[in-house]
Image (cartoon, rainbow over all chains, first blue to last red; front, side):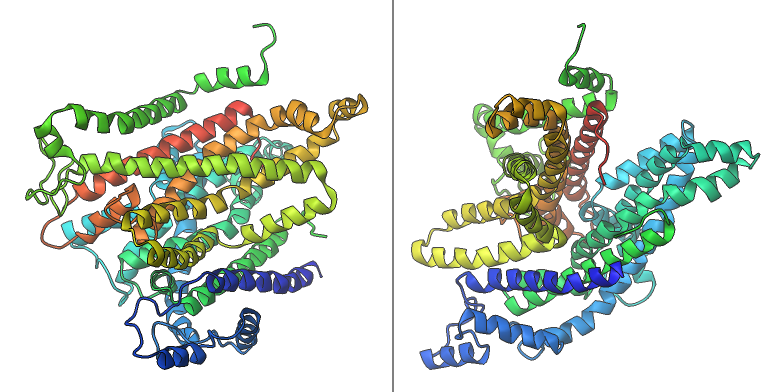
Length: 304
Length: 311
């Protein structure tokens, strides 16, 4: 019931976001065609304006855009004249989703074990080495990590392809560059969660029952300690999507990020607004999923 | 000290944290270096300045690090060391602006919303919620794009490229400032909300104190610790955003440079024949070290003020 209401609350939120984005982009002066050759005559200019409905009053433009959205029509791209924004999304979204999902899995697959080991061996050398590695990864942004990985693995040792999106091998460097800093953050969160959890009384009870240390760590501590990681998953997905801008640019991957950045550089307004909306919808949707996962993992949490 | 105040206690705890103190020294030295280096160029004599001026184009292209160009030279033969220090001006300035905005707007917004409460509170926080639910970097990009349209009109009116460049810099600051205060507003509001109904505040109100007096005398001193901690965590985030935008070509435009745009330039010249590692390693290394130092500082301040990580 609660989630149904949350789902319904998304509608006005997305409306507000779409209005804000549309207004910001449309109400500031400057036409999307400014950078091109000036049209031969005022008639041609007027014809172009009429074709893209730029001559109508603002509210009418916005309503037209909204009604288009309801049919899955994001309008034409102002730069790639023969493509609609929906076309481009259709091509680029699977690529970006693939990159995002694999990087998410990679971050979890590296971060969770790392956090677990550093917490289980706290004070020992695996803790110091692992914790230092984790905070180092947190502070190496993808825009530094990616060129370094390319230089070392792609060019110096020639082990992996340095760009493009052709085979599973092409995934390795982008995923590592994107995922490592999140792996570090996840490891730190899990370690802190484990250390906090290990102080609670039910852990003492479990130990008193004579359970082995492994059983205490895995079955009792981990389940509660992983909750901060789960609530971080929402922001994590957001950062993954935007972090992919840099990764897609440097590895020349034809994903949503490339199109979003280019649309912004080229003042391709319909594309910018459409993609911003898509990102916003993806994010609020995923945040909702994260909340669902949270109640499932921690039955004490009840949303009212 | 018989009875140390909370700030004194925090300071004592902070001093005992060695990585944090080292980070503070590093950041201090970095700031001094950034400020003093232009002076060195002025006082060092013509040959020194000629070798090191950040925009001096020479035919020493892609020299690896050597005795004169400590960090090598770039595609135009410019001294990379100098460019990194000049780029640090922008990167650090952006961090400072973000901190300033989140200090002024964030704290005021949160304090007013939390203290006044009621309808004003829900209206103010609803706005924060909406901005918060947008992925911030996307919001900044949309904002910068639309401001760019404004810029084009100005340019047509005045036609001065120098002005255009500084206008672009201001837009970048505006865009990053616009997202930097949201977390602060939320945190401060929560604190003020809980402080407002504490007995000592009620007592003060009962004695006839006005809202401004209560805010200044009772509420703000008590949120000080939280504010300092979140300021320290805001700065690295904003520096990272700026380098991200400049890397993508949406931020600083040449001939100006920031760490992000320098790394982007280095990445542009990656090729299979020769590796110009110094163009990535030095600016990237300084960025990473600075972020590391700021994060250590933020974490230790949190421990020192004993701030619980809220969410």
